[in-house]
Image 1: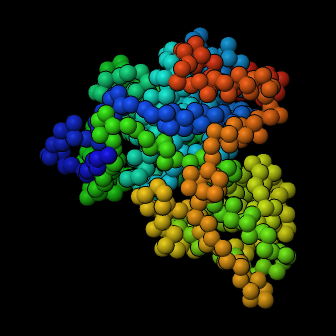
Image 2 (image 1 turned 30 degrees about the horizontal axis):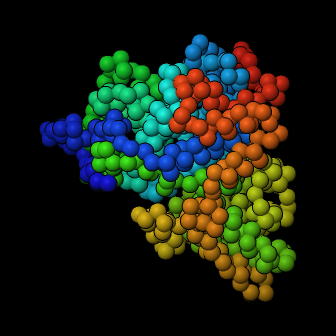
Image 3 (image 1 turned 180 degrees about the horizontal axis):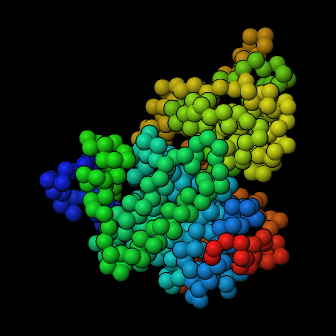
Length: 502
């Protein structure tokens, strides 16, 4: 790996194109580095993972709405939409929109946390949609996914968006553009322009994840993927982009991030070096914000030590800066303590999540968020006894550059009315690569089966899993079948409607 220095250049001080971050990202997108079996296996795992959570969310309102929009854009030889029959095809950018929303809706797929947050699996829907429409093979798709994961993870390691109140899709869009460039075998210069366009159009604020969180949280990554496809299309036609997008005097760094004196160092593979960043990412065993994963497991463990929840006086969670200020009491969001809050908001309240996990000893992607669950008087009582506090030790471990030393959990102190304390801690979730039960292929398939069992047929399940496990060998025709079909009578919004403009 090498470190790419990035800073703002005044207009009078020129920076050569080949020294710009966007060019460096384009270079690794257009190289032909080898890919080892462990990386290929993880791509397969993440395709299965994405499909499982997408199908589980297929009939939720935001997903059905996104699908309705895609159904208004049919295209012969286009791309498939999750749940719909494989012989119905749609324009790739709209298929990416619908599928990206389905993947993101339950907040239940893979994650990478470092200087910023990310869900690198959000790159898969736009890349797969373009692969289907452009007749690319499974091998092409794998190479593209590996590129997108590499760019996404490397940007997240180096450039913090959230401290400047920018949403994390600003790293997703250039990653998807780079991945699509790899998929299509585009020139470095074309990918360079596409990455810059993708960055330019994808900077948005974090209000999408603040206060009363709406369905836009699921749409935002899908929107970034759609923007990336459109950026690549324009640049394939010879169009350019604002340049230099990262280093310019009026660039995103200068006015949206660290300012004119801002400096970053972005780790990237050498040209021709393997791209292995996907192996540093991790999926979720529980349908909740990633920083709650270890704390859910810890709550289940601590439940065995509590005889009566009424005996609890207070619960203090000592955790990282990110956890405290994003999903903890440090966010100062009253909605995080509101029993009437949306699922999206409860998903970002560690106080609610820990209370329910402590009482139930488990977590369910539907039942744990049900209004009747959130509004149980005994849960509300316990929920409001929980606070978080930043602990410098946990913040330091959260940012450790060694992926084997990173920690995303916390230490929990439960104080009982009689003054007794129950203390325990957990650094990583059980399913994390460094956890007690790291997820393997069988776990991904089990997750798929659990989430789709009552939705799809056994024959469809077997067909899809078989395709996934042969992913690098798939022909272009087989890639076009890489979709999970739901019996049409079980699928809400299965035909074009007249509700909107499209």
